[in-house]
Length: 391
Image (cartoon, rainbow, N blue to C red):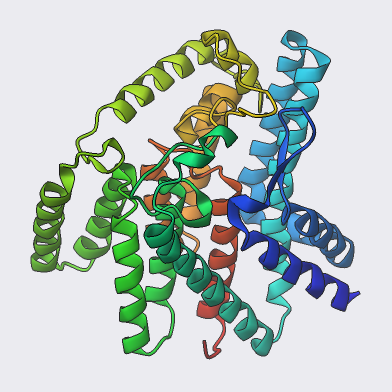
């Protein structure tokens, strides 16, 4: 059975490496899954059978239990206002999110029983993922810099920006930021570490994601000011502002740092979100009924074979999604959960800051790709500090 679990884990990594290419829809229904989620579900199920319910009883997981109960309550309340079809789809997505949480809890417990050699293998697997995605970003930027020809599949027509297999600049930037934090804190030879950080940093800049840049500045400020590196902090701020000015103006809207179309889009998005949230401030509309509410705000057809929209089922901000779907109670619970997560280890502190800031502007915190890589990095970072093993 252990061999089966290990093979399933390898399957998770292999299919995850496909990025958005591994995203598939289920017929004509507005339901999408990623191929890696199949082995992920099976792996989690087998580990649950293997370890039982003990991992769920950890005292630090109380906030997760409360959040899960509240999400279920908000779904039950919302069921009275939506059709069985709409509620069924919402339940499926809630179940999917819950499965990621279970994966995070049980993979942590599973790895805690692993040998140092096994931890080494997992560490190099994460290194491999970082190298793979960075490599595909470089290839995409130079050989496929304009992805406008796949706009008919529902993706934004980004041009001259690093998106890689994520196909969205904020997701690519977030993966790069988490990777830089992870590599900086790992035991690598300085020459490998700083060359890697340099390459990832350049790719990060070429995403032209302003939300990511702001998140990076805030995270860098926390990191440097906490260590009282005042001069270095001032230098980085100066270089950042200079780079913003030099890179800012562009004839292409996609790479124009002073573009206003995306700002206007986000303002409209927030306005719609606030209006939908006002229907049920306490418990929200239930996770995930957003698609059916947002469809009322436009005459555009969002679900069809050749023009599916990937934005209609969510909002730009992860926190806006949370407050709209689970109400003010869900938002407060989530903020408390972020504070608790922030204190887990050295990796989570800057990572949670970055994720929180960028998630004000883009749906990053709740995206499956980011959830998965974050879980793996947090888990390995935790055991790297609690055990002595050579990475």
